[in-house]
Length: 487
Ligand code: FAD
Image 1 (cartoon, rainbow, N blue to C red):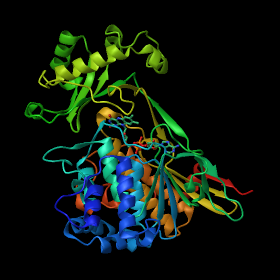
Image 2 (image 1 turned 120 degrees about the vertical axis):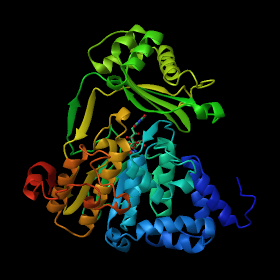
Image 3 (image 1 turned 90 degrees about the horizontal axis):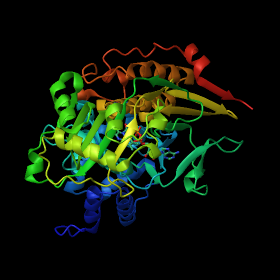
């Protein structure tokens, strides 16, 4: 909608871009804005500067101040350090987009591929204090006024994606949606590494790159990487979202930032007595929706008819045919009602991407993490640096809320690796350093990472308290981490 107070069409378009609430809308308005200002986003090296020159009014300026502050950090060497690198990022989830921003600031040509064409996840992510600080530095509040107001420390996945998408576009990152990565096209004599895509005639298929970052989520691990399985005791997670009408009564209801059985046995016993629902833990966040995530005990799911038949195999147990959807909705509804003291008025499920009540059940029994965070492939003398970030590097246990915090740490570490690559450091050293840093990731907590958030940068020494960049030696990655294909 046009801004009634503005008479300048480019200011109107910019305002619409800032406020846009869907992925498609953001892309459409951005393209109109570029057309109107006659700036070409493909001209990625000078795009941001030109955009700034042509949108030189107070509202836009306050955004440029934020982004300039970030861009001027010494790590980026004024965007020259990776000026010759071409990076393909797979996945426009929060971690892919966050990595793309850093790569753009390093001066690289960055293309992001995303198979979906909408951002539809209502589920809410917990943010560690450093991620809030980081996102504020990227002007999150300008794109989403409600961002972490007061003591709030969470955001819905889709809102986070929207913020990061907007920053990516402003920095000259090309974000291609509705296109699926299907594998690599190996270099020939004249061409470098390229991607096999669906649809196969997509123009991004012509992009030649020397860096490939996979941020494809938990189920996407590219060829060459191995995963470790961390099998724990059966853990069944349920997420659900209810409409938030932002009424006074809803505002009164207290959030539950995490109640675990061992800390509040009475709560869980009362829940069981009143409803028959037996949980290990529950979290409730009031965001764009009322969001709940809980870990449910199998016995109570069977008793309440949510799971029809008992199987020892978790895949069979939670297979769609073995789940009574109506019973699952009731279970989630009752748990949400009880845990908010029956104070949420008129609870109605929000809809998911398929237009169905947004309730889902997931298996967290078996979590994965990649054995390595990086590798280099070489073919016909052309090297490709590959890195993993986000859930495809380490799958998070959602109720613990570590996904974004560790995801962004890995995004920064990956950008640091690409920086070393751009500087022309021997690739074995680049890999050894990346693997040294990766060893720290799973142990990170808000307590043992640095509290000097204002000093955080892609340099690992600014974030990890005790970092040894040489704990893995170059000769160690030679054995485990490099696939050479010379022929
Ligand atoms: P994701 O956010 O999963 O993004 C990966 C992206 O890659 C996706 O957009 C996907 O479409 C794209 N992609 C995958 N393969 C390809 C391909 N071949 N070509 C092109 N694109 C591809 N965490 C919580 O803490 N709480 C929750 O309640 C919660 N709910 C979730 C619900 C769902 C359905 C999912 C998938 C994840 C959920 N998570 C939740 C995890 C959380 O979203 C992630 O930790 C966080 O988003 C960071 O993930 P990411 O960017 O690494 O990957």
